[in-house]
Image 1 (cartoon, rainbow, N blue to C red):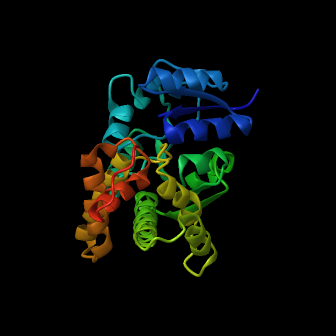
Image 2 (image 1 turned 180 degrees about the vertical axis):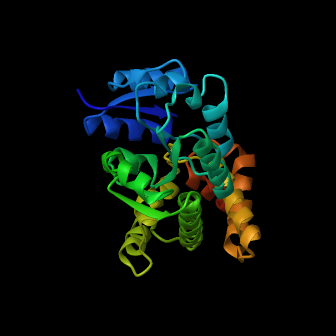
Image 3 (image 1 turned 120 degrees about the vertical axis):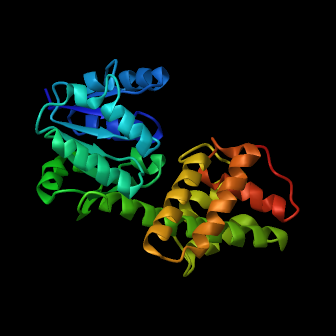
Amino acid sequence: MGERIGIVGIGLMGSALSANLMQAGYEVQGYDVDGRRVDEFAERGGIPMESAAAATKGARWMVTSLPTSDIVREAVFGEGGILEGAEEGFLLADATTSRPEDSEHLGAKLAERGIRFLDAAVSGTSTMAWKKDLIIIAGGAKEDFETCRPYFEGMARAAYHMGPVGSGAMSKLIINLVLAGNRLALAEGLLLGTKAGMEMDTLLDVLQDGACSSKTMIDKGPKMINAEYSPEGLVRISLKDSRLMLEQGQRFGSPMLLTNVWSQVAQAAYEAGLAEKDSVAFYEVLRKMAGLEQRSV
């Protein structure tokens, strides 16, 4: 029987993380507010629990994978929350894409209760997560990172210690900033090719093989061309992340030219009814700007 660990948040990303941990030999007990997600988790061999507190009991380590840092705070401090089940020395790793200041505040509050904390953001889509093709970027005490290394090896192909609490969240936002630029540039290029009457599959092959090649072109190019927006990430989450990026630019006085444009495009996609579609469904907004029809999504 393997070591028992906990997870709170079994959505697109949490489902894959928990499955990888079970594959690595851990017994995983989990909780999510969505009962359907809990049922799917149980079908994969997970141990369903009735609350975040229950998912914590009997475990020394837990990962949270939730939509926002506000929801993380509620999962920790709210009724039936993680603190109710955690014993002193418990180690919480938060994989949520959070505001760095929120992670810093949460880490300080947990330290007062004798709970160790890492902001351990993951980089990669949920599809990549199922293949364990993720990296983890973590902020917190170095010794806590080393304690978590076996768990991280169960979830991802690599893990990096980025510095104190908050560093993981900041690193994730920077990754997402660069990723947004890649996706926006790809969308503009594909749209120009469409308007010019080019053969799109051939154009994408060339882009993927050319000097501009990136993972985005391989993972997201076909989705844009074929209007296949089954979610690996969500437009509404991309919009939330873009706003967090802009906050950090203001916080540090760093120019955010591209990010401002990206945030507006994500906002337009959200308002166009694409909130629950894959993050690159914003391509349909650009198509409309170009005088083309929005395809069924």
